[in-house]
Length: 482
Ligand code: CFM
Image (cartoon, rainbow, N blue to C red):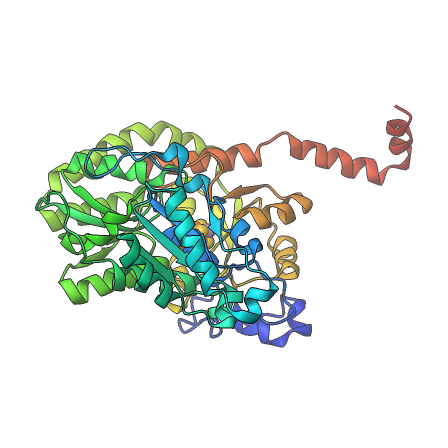
């Protein structure tokens, strides 16, 4: 189907390669320009490669001190903005002193002009030493390149190698300056490779079982991991390492000892599962735990792998029984409501079917910030004919989506929420969540509840009232004169 739907295409013809409307008669539809840099002049919602490594992959590691090698802006930007809660629990049964550490703090080298001219390596060295002194409980130090230090070419690997020896603990450099890729996705890639190359295989776990798994690409957003963990425990499966929600540095180091890797976020973390499989022969399975149907399917597959089918069935039955009344209630309330799903990548293919099949909603638009071809294929498989699929939408296109597709709600991130609200459109956060967790059986009910609360919020009646007021000068007079 040709799409003259988007007005902005007239002024930015390249954007045609980022948009299509699903047509069942044309199975070859694709986004040929996904995962390329944003067209100059388009107001993008994407993040940078540094955000991808620090904000997504490594930031949740609870016992590492994070040192950002940058002018102070990137450091402030990297500070505890993401909602991944953490327990003090360590694998040896001990407690990590979270109260005076980690996610509460971020450290930076505070680069100035003279460092840019003469090099920032001395400052990096000094800052890492200071961080180690200030936070002796840190089990590792992670240092991050940023645009400035990438441009001046500081040899971070050299500095951290020396310091690892001096300090007697792992000091790791992540070389993903903001500009090093089109989106945060590049930072995921660098983060995976760096952790694999420097850490995996360097330590042994205190004990192992025949049922050890790595839960990869699970960042414990608003407690997602704590929904999933009991499923595994009840099945008799042990999570040896989580990559990287609520995890500690050592868990990364012994990932090679798992019997199976489960890849939850397949955009940000399939890389390390692949590397571990190739080098250590640990197989991996891609899993999807959003919505009750996928959750049941995937628990079954994991049960089958370990010969624990009965236990998987018991977990599924228990949770399905628990959520059934709520699921029915929200399905009745949300039936026929139109929804636009907009996240980074994977949540755009995790969510459409559960929203449609379990809640009776209609997905009219799906957009992503940084999905690659394989992810777009999954989106295409899982949405209905006539759904518009948009890669890296700019703000004008976002307004057009609202105007043309008239969604009743947008599921997106915090940046888009303001735009949605200006357009009088309800919006629920699906990146960091509103009242999550949103994963698993129980989590899906939390999502349904937030969607319901948002669509049926009485504030929208005031919007209609305001429109009426604007149409009627007499009313305005009355309102103004009290
Ligand atoms: Fe993976 Fe994620 Fe996502 Fe992601 Fe992200 Fe995220 Fe996301 Mo926001 S790791 S790709 S870089 S599932 S932060 S928890 S919600 S854009 S779809």
